[in-house]
Amino acid sequence: MDPRALFAATAQSFVDLIAALPSPVADPVLWSSRALGVWDLRALVGHTNRALVTVSTYATTALQAPQTSPTPTPASEPHDADPRPHRADPAPSTAATDCTDAAGYLRTASRSATDPDEVAARGVTAGAALGADPETAVATARDQALAALAVTPPGTRVAVVGGLHLPVEEYLRTRVVELVVHGGDIARAATAAGTPVEACPPEEAVVAAAVLLAEIGAHRGDGPALLAALTGRGALPAGYSVL
Image 1 (cartoon, helix red, strand yellow):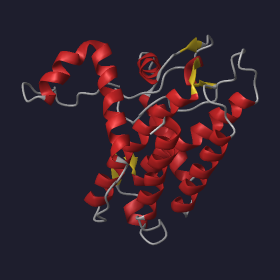
Image 2: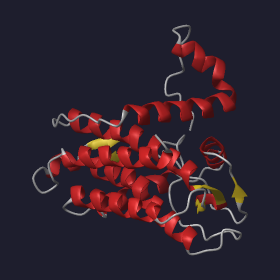
Image 3: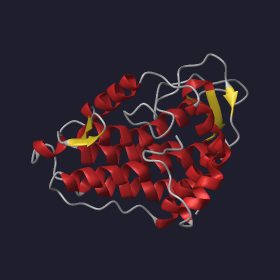
């Protein structure tokens, strides 16, 4: 499955997951229950929804600017950012940096971290923006992202946070990681709060996310440790993350 089709299928699985949850009006306790780090479920869903929102924002911005010139950099999360210190947003940069692929983008973005409190605050803001009907909000974000991609030529370079530029298809690979990983977080949090749901991303999306994250870890020098853990020859440290 090509990156665009895989992103669309994974986005649909996220919409389906949120549709399976009772609304905040029907179950306000669920949406205010603890989910990930300092985030409640609303903030976590809001943050995950930005995997859709940023696609339409970046693609639209790229179409409005010549591809030979750096496009303005909207503010957003670069990768799977959660409120914990080891998953922070990169600090703004004034110099554009070209990345050829998703792994290079995430490695570059991860090297420049900002205040984790700012990451947490953005999640809260994104959650509040979902309003009383998160199901409709995420479906609308999905539709807008797909509409923007439909008019974005293959290979279009998008400007993302930190002055980084990369092909839109490579950016979509990072959004698949975001949707798969946080979809699991949402399902676990809702289930722990008494509302059992299951995240069901496409198997190919899970494979793609695992491959990309393993690639990042290998480039970081953790390849032998990852191989040992995957083959039962060792264990990774508690709380290990490649991001």
